[in-house]
Image (tube, rainbow, N blue to C red; front, side, top):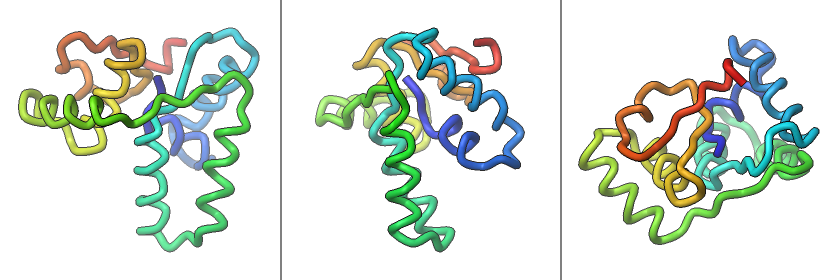
Length: 134
């Protein structure tokens, strides 16, 4: 499951991980990487970040629709179980609000999160895959 770091990296050509994100999403679209989804909570976080930087609603919609149009890229829903588990993750591991939502969603989806964020390694039962190694 993908969280926000690869989404931001793909959107920003100046991001140090832009090439990594491009390769990741190409591998998903081609079917080389299977059963990969974006946490819906990452789209929510993206919207909040874009709004805080002054982007208008059309730009936000365009960016989210771009990801939704990537072939073979699924969505991992934000459920009440994910929210409840995220509260526990914050209490036990000290993750940020959105990182706890992403981690919780990943645990419920398939137990794997694709991210460069080292904080996820503290969460018991969550496998962290560094996209630079894919």
